[in-house]
Length: 280
Image (cartoon, rainbow, N blue to C red; front, side, top):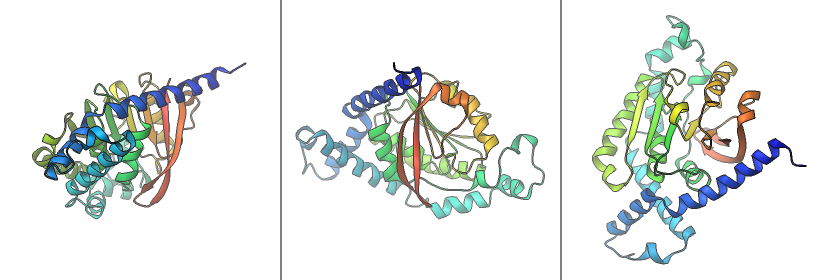
């Protein structure tokens, strides 16, 4: 007889696969960018979107997305973001452990180490493994310069893509990228809303109240911070997906989330496993 946990896990795998297939067939932003690419090439590929396979179309669209993202971040490099994090006033106070508010003590030197996910790998993950639609909201908890947020925006039909960042220097950097996006890129998309919030992720309740896909770059988070995130994550809605870089081990969390996918993805420091959970 199948156990309840196995039943939940099998059902989650099935739902995730079916939802992803539907997503790929109706992704407005991907097709909008692809059409923009066709127009950029003076219509030399006119009709291409109607005559290639779904896999070919996905590859063409993904290449266009990466070109757009690399262009968007041409002046906002990893080194720029790394420097911004190291010179942030809060970062300095936490590293020195001086004048730190008691509510900031759950952040450690390791939890504030800056790193970025590889755009190509993250786009592939979102396109092929994460179900989403125009009613969903994407959150990045520790969004840095906003790369993951814009990757989600360009490949996804989310109602809104939101980045939450504690360090004000990085928030300002992401806001500058958003200004460029609104001026040069926003018109190319069907679904356009992007927002950045300067806040402690534990103080902002939106991500567990209305988030449908939440990315948590938790590789270096300490045990206390991970447990506090788990306490909030269990409140997420049924069907919501949580993407993270290190497994959550709490019993309460794992009683309501299924681990439905594990795969390696390139990061700024090398390859790292990514785990996809889905709330049942």
